[in-house]
Length: 390
Image 1 (cartoon, rainbow, N blue to C red):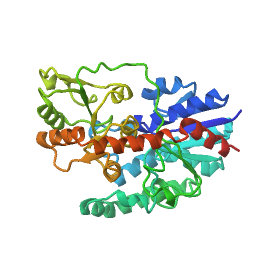
Image 2 (cartoon, rainbow, N blue to C red; image 1 turned 180 degrees about the horizontal axis):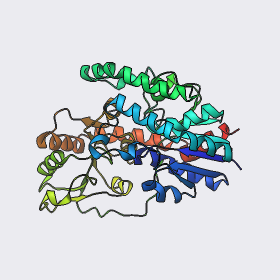
Image 3 (cartoon, one colour; image 1 turned 180 degrees about the vertical axis):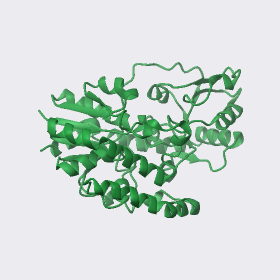
């Protein structure tokens, strides 16, 4: 029996793919401890793992909603939050690891405190990558505007200072790429297929492309029209009332059933009286909805895109960050969606109708789906972890 410790950042999209892996490990008789955040406690404990709260140490949890929208958009700000959290957790996690003596640490690629403590204490380590694996080749799809590149250059002195803070505490991190870039010498689980991963042949055999980790669902969505359009801008940067109003304008009184998931940053009262064919909710069971969906209007978070393509659903893509833009670029490359540069009601409706009438988008989504289903899944991810255990 092995003892395995997971670390993750406070995000559904980074947590959800790991949960079926945890279930698989526990079903084989192994013990799992999972460091995460109280609002994710229930879903983690449902797997059978022992939950350990990071809330008292995590800096992102202390951000205002406005500050939180900078995560993923402002590299210097994001780096500071990651470094602050790593240093706040340092004493606790190091002491816990000395006591637990785990056989392996599995950490989200953005939960740098997990990787850093594994390196610091010499514990076998597996990176859990819920985005595309990132190296000098695959990063070419993450196209940045001149303004973004200029902003990165201006922010480098701040980033360097934060990296120095980690170095002063004994963490063997040389530069920002040690945080952002996947390492060919590190055992790594990637929750997509080698077919969908850009430049998959440039990664070493230490990488396991296991496909999306799709949880089971018992909920059934009532499909009331022949075609269902699902709209969601994710669980973080979703304060987007003008976009939601554009979607309503585009789809009012059409022959489509429309389900919108808008989060908790907007008030449902602000939508007023909705057309009969449109329903708006703070949250939905996304897996249950996607099983019935014909077109997904999405922010292009990696987890959402993987789930959409798994269920053979083409996408209208409205990315909000450079990472999401990279995902959207890849979906466009494989012909499974349309990215909108100009967002208004007419553009949204035109893109939806094209996806519904040009079956090449659906066919290409089916090809990616089949590639996902041919992957090893949670069993393959568990195998990779157990092979790494000391």
